[in-house]
Image (cartoon, rainbow, N blue to C red; front, side, top):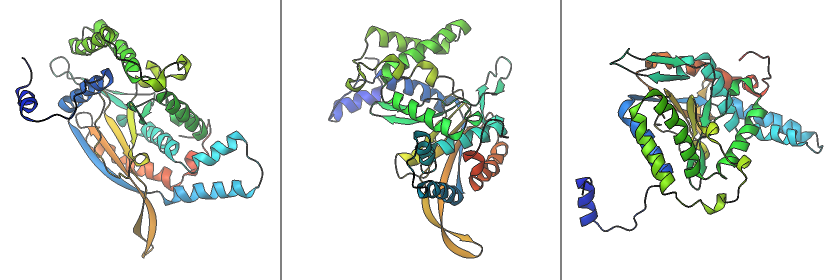
Length: 322
């Protein structure tokens, strides 16, 4: 009783292969993204960038380092890695773009019955990046990548990725839910009590810990502070599948989400001749309550400038202009 009637009909009339109870992690994701789909008017766009200069710059640096013939230090090997794998480059570049486009690094508080609401443009730039694990997707945060060298960003991403794959997702989500529940109680925000009920159920009827994360020391796991408090999310779809376009769902209360697609070799016209170029598609989704399309057009010029002049990111050091 009290079950959705369409589900009841399907259960009665369609043979089932398997029935799995939703884990606490999946319940939490469903809760957050359902709020996103109901409350945020999403607008999306896809922009192509010619990243040939980025690849040429990276190849030139790696070739020069290899040509030295000497045995490379750990730091030099990391430097070579960030010139071949561009995940850290994109994340740091997005940090720089957000510095120049603060409306994209914001939180939306829409309260039409109280005072209309506020748009909070954040000083801290805290993008989270998606990591696929055998338990699902985690999104650890790199805080203020625009103030760190590219090697530091890459090292931090590597550490957080390793921790993501050694963390029990249900345990982590319980800690995050308690973090948020304490604020819901303080603010008398009754909408947060649903999350509180999910948290209480997960404590009363805990699920067994995944075998691959048992006996992992606490310092090698993600903590709540590593995943709570992002100002936007970066999904690197191209690292996982041959995908080049997507419409991402914004985790509230953020107002922006990025999707980095697969880099493809495509024909383009350069100086009147058709030549092969490396093209990546960046999918952006934004909260249309917080901004109009015209408010974000500037990001294309800013991001393209960093891509056409990759040394601004690769060679950036503290004290340099952002």
